[in-house]
Length: 427
Image 1 (cartoon, rainbow, N blue to C red):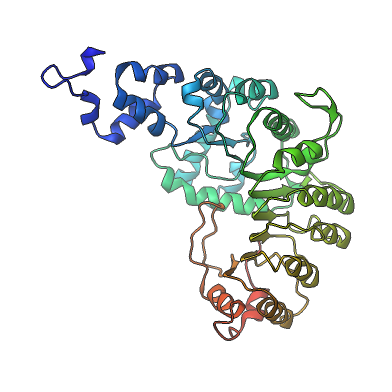
Image 2 (image 1 turned 30 degrees about the vertical axis):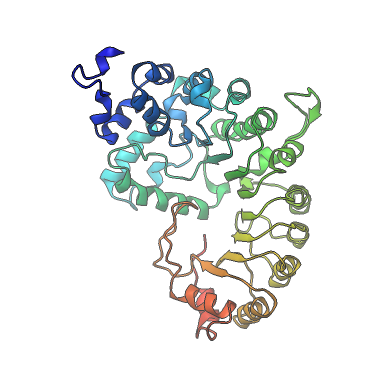
């Protein structure tokens, strides 16, 4: 240890190096080596806790991070500093790059292809395995938040990540618009990706501490309907729905995008609606709820009515995307929560209007019945760039600003709003 101290002053020599350089050194070390930093340098040890993780542990299939997860769990000092776990669950066939040869720059597409191809690893079959999760999760005693995503940009660590991000966003958006029944996806890889969600839910419910924030982007309906499972701690027969209810019951913030169709296989709308309504109705502590649905997949009235028939006593911020709910059904839900709701964010495809004048009627009832501190109709302007929930640009567009002022009784009805909605971008 003495070799890391200045012989003249006894000062820790690491403390004189730039933080960025030390953070890069730490990112190259094994978890066991990072744990040993305390034996070499107090300054370096403190940076090791902050610089390597920034309170977040990211798991990617193409870095064989299950071994890294296990290594960190075996170092209680490291595991204790993790407050958020982020898991990229997509498999390598999720975006079929050859479909975009004529739509994006060739060099950027080639670079994305190379980065994505590197995801093919021999260990991908055990990624998110429930036994590996269960073994590791009990050590993460301070985790408060989990993100599971297959749409967020996964290559932030690349030198040209910022250049590749817009193309990735474009591909994600186009993939959402395509008809799943027409795509020749790899059934095996899709089913393996879907299986990762029950593995996580079972393990997290049993071994992680109570969570306050959870993001599923997306959560496959194929996972939600699974039954005949066995709970990890109790060894009792259970279902994904039961485990989800117990996992999410203490949440204060939930973002969930339901993905409901694959290769032409559609699930019965009303029955799924009952399941989702039971799930949402259990969120008695949620303050922030962000919901998104596959556009056109579940439009049966019975499905929508059941979902918006729930009561959430603590709801303050509500965000809704891509369900095309009848205005009267959504309005009934909002009025039920008028005593608590403060912020409302709707996509242009959250509501289904039969004529332009219905938008003004809906907004007028909102203005007269609720006391909103913030209102936003996002993905409104055709030129507005849409990004993932944590990365989207903040400018809501001129029409959205006009609607917000109207909803808050701070301005007149924006001219042409109803007609603009008919041409709004569908996501």
